[in-house]
Length: 116
Image (cartoon, rainbow, N blue to C red; front, side, top):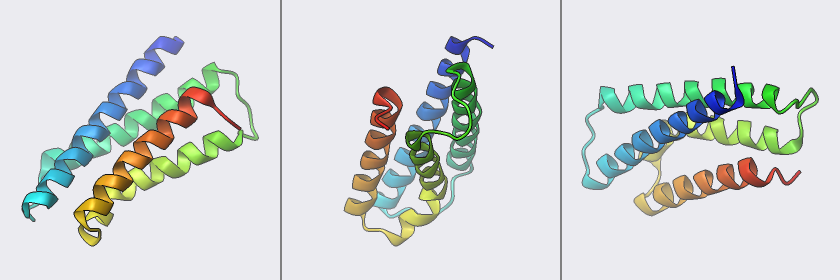
């Protein structure tokens, strides 16, 4: 598949994760403890698209094993996003919102600049 299709799928995954985490954080802030199946589905599909398209982009960029350090950091951030809905009930609202913003920012910086 072309590079642009992988990029669009990756951005779709990012959008879905943003919706799911934002919805989870808003539910936490208003005190609603009932699980929402739609948020869980968006989260899972978002993680899948990010994973699939991310490794497709790595292949299209011609990056071979051993991966550079920035890819390992992106994988750790992906795992943190995967665990985020389970960790938010244990965090305060301020910590949850701040950590979500910092994770998104770090992932964007690593993806755009590929610093190391």
